[in-house]
Length: 403
Image (cartoon, one colour):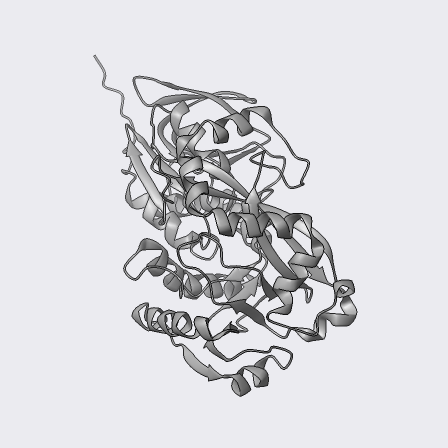
């Protein structure tokens, strides 16, 4: 029997396993990942940005964990030889009506204890010569890395600490037992005294398997990207973002210089008809029905009808996508960008149609469920892992009484 079983081998499940192993060196820990390798989904299909925390509501877990995670992730990369850069980013206003929103964002950065700087249009061009704007904000602490490599290092450290990792082990059922749970997997049954659900895109389903209903359900959104052709990468030096609508869960199409030197543009965000659907044609009937029969989805869609329509247009029209990018860099041409990988974001939504705006960690009987951990979860993974472990009791070794 294991003391702890973690479901999900993405960056949160791995960080939680690592935090458990450090807190309880003698604990018997097993991690189940249904894929043949780590970071196949959200953890390995993101922009690679080490976020600063400027966007998040002051006092929220997202704001605190992003700020602290920015430092701890950089330190982790330094200590383990993982490539990273603290390159900073600029957020720019391109229309008069955006100037007040930019100032509000600047004030939010100060409230979140960040070093942020106001920039004139000329100062923005000193950083990013090809950007046309009215004003901007510089966020120096933003960085980039390769989170798939971070996940690989987490997994290596877990196994060095004696943890057991089961790849290709899909969790199919969870049964309560006298001592905890029996986790039925494609590798057979495993007994555990405590269950930790870090299943990402499937976290709501795993919670229900474990006897918990978080009320919120996962609605998957596909983020589609283009990338600049090598000859035009000079148009972007660091990271360039528009002023976002903070009531919408996405930041708008932006430019990101990746750690390998490539430059990605995007993402737009459209409803995915499959929870792991990385193509426009990806479809899964069970996933589609789960979304379209959930009243919270339709209430969310009605609230954001205009934004949703724009996202759909960009999905099916490269010209519309490029026009959004040209708001930031007018000299960009259609021929300068080509399609690249997509990702799917697991966004938890309440039945009333409101977004679960913060990380959501729920305690059950001998269990903890991470039911919402979108961006900046990769940045904040070490902090989230420690926070999850704070909800987990230490398991004392069982003793046998002679009679």
